[in-house]
Image: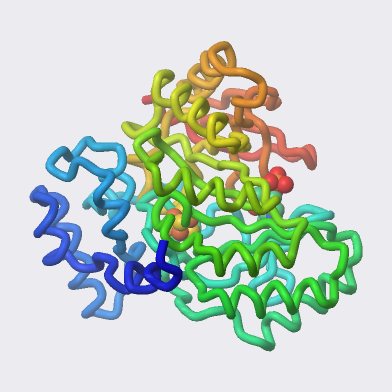
Length: 364
Ligand SMILES: *Cc1c(COP(=O)(O)O)cnc(C)c1O
Ligand code: SF4
């Protein structure tokens, strides 16, 4: 892979309906999305998530087929304007835990730093859509200094998760600056980077990037593969590059209706991850982000699928099925959760803090 070719590839992402329709036949509904979105932009109304897809990710889809599992991940639809009354602009209540701009400290020993709102592909189900694609800049020097100072004062923090957006869309130099600023002051901190790059722009995983990341080990990559179709020579090579450099890779998937919500797909996905030396870490129940109900799998169905999956795959192949409780309850593993059915509110699920949070029953 040519080292700087990824930048061209990133720049050449498809960001308009006109360009997209050269490759995919858009349905009425899809065309209507772009029209509505254009009008909202003109009127200065708040927009949903931006649109962008890499030519690479597009090429994995069978774009003539509206049900294609890759196409559905990047293709917007009018359903994104359907808001359920229980959906929230910030479903995880992250702003409540934002201790300094960009730094979210919810769990005692780990903190999450939002370094950019940019992504290579905007996943239509993204739960952080109030931030993703909006704040397109890179974390500023002052913000970074303040975040590092906070973490220095709170020495219970053992791990920092870089997220956004996608930290690996930044140039090597900026990634080096951010990691350098963190590690020069917090020598013992473990770094995790949450990124979709291996599945959507594997060309980004260059020798140059690896040599920067290697300087900051122990460093973990948390990637996102949702469907077996995302495994290609290129993406598998990208995963190997991290792992061969002593950078372990874990995967987080999202359980997505019509994309991976069947046993065969989930079992195959798990097998491919394990064969590529990647540990399936989490599979998330859809968060209650505004305009994403068409992607959510009803909770009871999710539980049944995951129970079936646990009988099909090995221990290392089994992810934790978890939900981030709406409104700031934090993550809980669903199979073991203390859960009650309440007819008005759906499910009342107990958080690790002992409080109950409601999650809707969408099976009706
Ligand atoms: C998910 C998350 C973490 C990491 O949690 P793990 O269970 O260790 O993966 C840390 N901080 C925030 C705010 C999170 O949402
Ligand atoms: S890569 Fe992650 S942050 Fe970016 S749109 Fe997809 S889910 Fe959201």
